[in-house]
Amino acid sequence: KARVQPPGRGASGIAALHIKGWINSMDTAPVKGKLDSGADITLMSEDYFNSRRDLPALKEGMRIKLYQLTSGAKIIGYTTFTYLVTTTDSKTISFEVEAYVVRGMMTPLLLSEDFQTSYELGVERRASGHAFVVLRKQGYRIEASSSLSVDLGFTIHRSYANTSSFIRRKLARRSKAKRKPNALVIPPPVYAAHDLVIKPGFVQYLEVIADWGERTSWVVDKVLIANEHEDVAAIATSWIHTENPYLPMANPGTRPIIIRAGDLVGQLLNPELDL
Image (cartoon, rainbow, N blue to C red):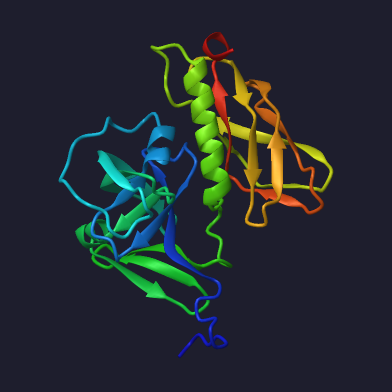
């Protein structure tokens, strides 16, 4: 046995096996692909699908009931995309993926048994949490992780259901009430471009990324960001220009707060439609 833990702590430090990849283009933010061999079909969350403008419109697929996801999860269709990854010898390879989009699922992307079987993927595991996804016929190896302590170069913030669902419901109600009938129902999301540590009692500027479209100026709606300790970082409703995409982030608490690259930190509002 290569990994020994105290009684009752066998899962300590373990995370679902995952790889780092990009959807359709490596110019976009990377997305963590969790390799879930316990699920039959590849799944994508509705929230993540709505955050991407480059994905094809949903199509109707097989009628499937989801028994093993969170309560309220529902398949609303499927989409297709190219998943790009880098190998250990710095080559870029691509996978054509068909994913069912799920309402109520928190994980952005689950690469399930259909995906792994189609490409005949194997896994080499180590007790340290370092792992490799292997394409044996082609001889490629992709760095992977099954540990909280092994970072593949990015970290996606966990969703904490109580706070996050409250914020999403609040923003959805506000946006729906403000928008004109022919406008988009779901405001485009705004993500942190880099990791940022905010000291207690300080305000620091965070660089952000979003699908700016053709507009050069936007309003970013205020939102509260909570971590697992229920510490809260706050961003005020702010004007932002795409040439200087920085937002002030305040930490009113007594402990440092870490914002991770890829965290959802706000939503764009079109000042001509929403104000």
